[in-house]
Amino acid sequence: MKPFEIYSWQPPGWPEPHPCVVVSHRDRADRKTPVEVVMCSSQRAKRLPGPTEILLDNADGLDWPTICKCDVIYAVSKGELTTRRGAVGQERAGQLVRTMIAAHGWGEVL
Image 1 (tube, one colour):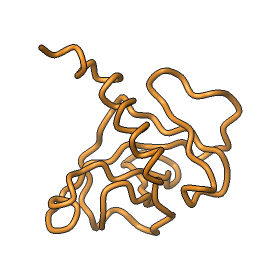
Image 2 (cartoon, helix red, strand yellow):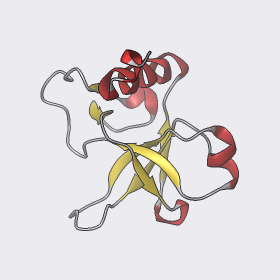
Image 3 (cartoon, one colour):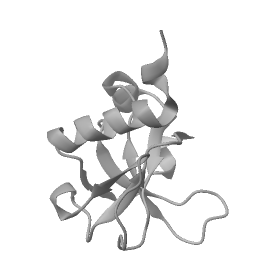
């Protein structure tokens, strides 16, 4: 498992699996559990992403344009992550990280 790979995960109580992006450091993603992920919608995007979201699509291995929510990070056991769906490309990985930083207000830390 590597950072920015996209897997399916069905959080407890959710009716279906959703795509999620691994955002853990490569050492954790490779050797440890849990890993950190951000969730994406399972539905085709019908709007532009908001300030705490980015848009992923078939270039990343998804079937259609999908909104990825960068304002909450989940800790997930690797065993709960199923089908590898793709990987976020380098340019969009940078956008995802910048959006996570802004969404959490980490850029405001002195």
